[in-house]
Length: 73
Image (cartoon, rainbow, N blue to C red; front, top):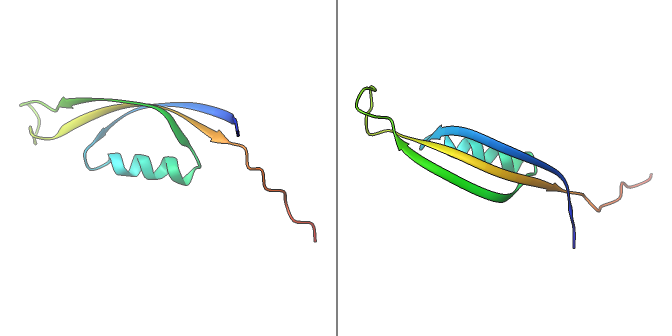
């Protein structure tokens, strides 16, 4: 069984349109989600688009050590 060698906590606020970019960034950087929590909040009546939802995300992610050895030429 592989262990994580690095952990990181992400706490960010996104909209429904920007949340996918956040997940894409996590995957591209090699993070695996260990814990995920989200709180949805309406932007409210005072904003330009009251139906927009803000999503506060808390993620604890880890990176696993790569077991592949570099090739020697």
